[in-house]
Length: 85
Image (cartoon, rainbow, N blue to C red):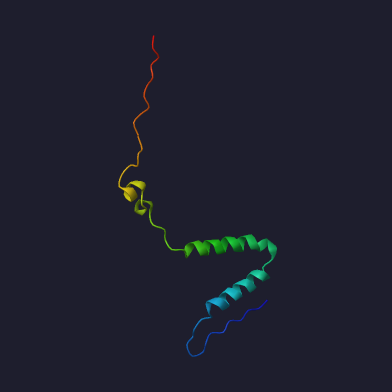
């Protein structure tokens, strides 16, 4: 398989995202079956790298911050029962 990519002469503009996706499909189609797990692993790594950063756990809202305090939760210890006699 041979893939040739031409850039626009006047602007030097790269290929469009849709054409790039099509070229990726063509490259994947040409891979032998034993190479597919490695290709998937590489694509997952690239996908994760380009995902927006998640907020740090300290920035996430907690139940106390959302409601302003505990909601009917009794955190006192269980009573100690002593049998009579």
